[in-house]
Image (cartoon, rainbow, N blue to C red; front, side, top):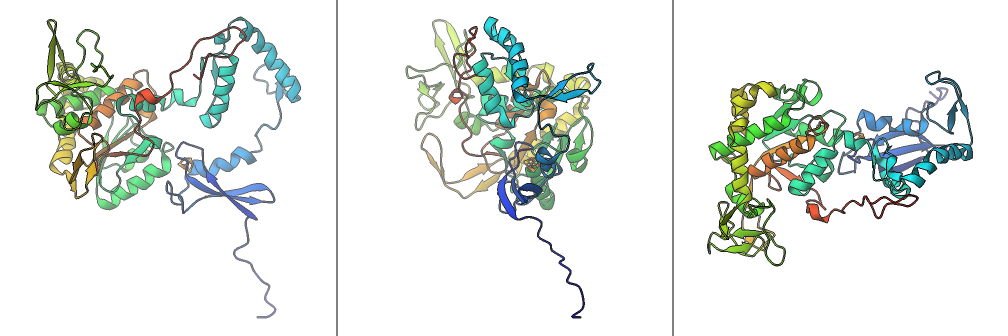
Length: 447
Ligand code: SF4
């Protein structure tokens, strides 16, 4: 035995481990980056990180190529042959910057907004937007504009945040999960881990997608929708739920702006002298500010001023979404889903939300400062991504999906969608874009 050669079966693969987060997508999974002789040797998931608990997706492990790929540019290259010939020569940074300045300076001096500036995935967007603002053009964007920005913007406007980095379904308690237009590289690890939990508990997953691959292949039910028609399908679900009265009236009245009065002439929310939204209190039948302690907002409230009757947001929603154009029979052909199936999904959402409601013995205090002994949960939840947002109607489609969650009372409720701090945030808290352009000068503020 003494003569046997020593075989190290666990050689040290790195001399240093750096803990950081992956940004191959916006999940920011925790990763351990193994360094050997100052170079990235490999990447593994960090088991102690709350987002991914050690899981690393294929895209995340390919992050090593961001620094090690042989094809990565190390210096500026100038094309020296015809376009497409692949003939380049290496030039200095000074020469590259002179060439770029030669293109850009005349535009900036004349009218900087003539420059449209587009960058790829937005890891360094703080720098690229800083550059564009200082160049003086508001016409800049990054990858997200062709991807999930509609989802984020629609969510912020509708309920103060959206899916993915804003929060996630209550994986431990949801009983019915509906997924719209989600590719496997989007929100990859959290969704896979969440689906694993649902499968273990026997919760139902419905996948809505034109093709049945990835997440849709493991869904209990697949709904093969016509691309770009998700909004119409969702509005039809809303139509059915409203028609059947299967909506959470208490939730809408107490915790949303559905009971706020709309100015019949401008369509804007009516406000009191302090700028607070106005509702009609069911107890006093009088106008009151929405967030007043003890107020019981009336979803059917109205106020008559100078011959004009002003009604609630809820009233406007009923008028709009009960329109027969959203009936399952009216949309079935366009969305490619039989009317009976649309009706069945609406029924199932309502059945799980209301007939299988959760009640937690958990005291909580609402935003009016009123304390409640129990917490009611609607165990239906949703997730959606690029497949529905990257269409010309994406913003409105995403808004419709957020409205669907809200009328079911499943936002910020056990079993539904749960925000992560600092969300939800009111839309008004986000900075207003600055668009004033001046020749030879930066924008008049952040855009
Ligand atoms: S899901 Fe994958 S790509 Fe996204 S942050 Fe996590 S490891 Fe990286």
